[in-house]
Length: 119
Image (cartoon, rainbow, N blue to C red):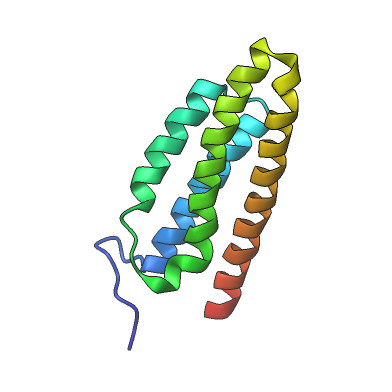
């Protein structure tokens, strides 16, 4: 039996993979300096709201770490604001960045696995 599809002919895994890509892109935009802390926080809130709509267990391998990235994005945003005025807080920002990079790597790995498993 084929997986159910939405009106754009996408499966839940397709939609989850697409959304995970948006989460990764938003996190990386901050990590590489294209977005500031305020934009990061806005992106995190918007993406968290979109992630709530998924309840298909098949999407968990990619969406669970994506959800964690949005939490880390909020931590990075808060730490970035603190680090701007308190040099001692820079270490906290660096730790959030490390966590986020690790989660981005996990989402990329899971995305590749989803594609390979369907091939």
